[in-house]
Image 1 (cartoon, rainbow, N blue to C red):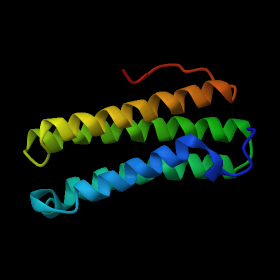
Image 2: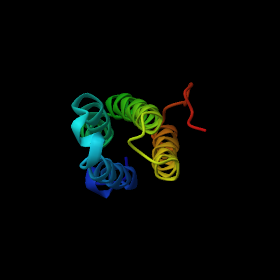
Image 3: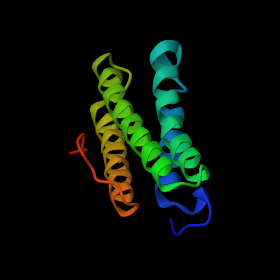
Length: 127
């Protein structure tokens, strides 16, 4: 882990940006009134950046890898929930697709970071 803080990791900044975007799109309209889906997608987005930070701060390679995998799983959860939001009419397809691609790209970067940190990507690769 060559970085000195989790804030110096690109994936953490990418996760932070995705979280901000998710909060923005869930702030208005019917999405804001669907507390269950709104809160779930927000928690999943926050989980990505939080797991990167927590894993890094634990200091060990094995722990970092474990938390990177959890972050990657949460990025997948965000993608899945974006489908639900689109299907019920909370998001138009172009915005939902853009956010899903952002989450998928983040997932790929998390997997690549896990590989570089000494882990092997086993399954669940974002396409």
